Length: 293
Image (cartoon, rainbow, N blue to C red; front, top):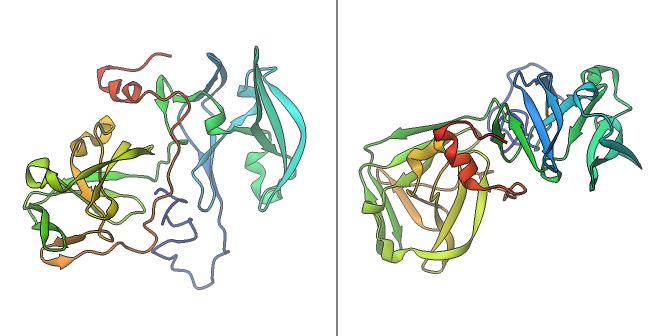
């Protein structure tokens, strides 16, 4: 899922390897300019606005945006009597973010003991994503974490034979599956409702959130919990999979052209919490023009 998350090349669990004669360090951090205008909002006020954001990719973490202190609204950062130690980047000072009557503790940090090779982060501050109300690129809200330029989703129509079974019962049978390729993941196969025995799908409570695809709902199949999922209204960038059903190959039997699929190592997904105050319609309405804060 991008450069440093899931099975990306800097994640520590990559499915590929760098072709070098010498082994690389166990952990590699990568910093680069975002090259997009990024803004932060708290208590209906813009507290940071910058076109000079630096993105830090750290193994097994989502990318984090670092703002120049000069692009942060004066007076909103209150230094705390709290210093922690980052394993690679040294001393870390923490700040409360204060806007009017709103005070959010441990909501921002900066590195004050940086090694020489990480000087790009000097004089920069990061905001805890879910402690803020929202982040925006230009006038559109970005959800989940700072946008990862190395994360990509491609959706392709296929004519391959896809069959899903639970024991002797056929749950789905199609020759028109849709395959979704997502950075860091094995392909995921989606099936149109007309090709699914919906009587076999038992709706279950609870949704998960993907910053790139939207809110997912789940089905149990027989005794198999959350064996299938769908996005009732996927984000507009991936709208082709809206309301299609996908199946977990480690919970039910999924055959592609007669070959049984298996869940590939490292493909488990860590649930991602929903951003504060996120209204999915705010993202879905992008198709009608920019959302004005």
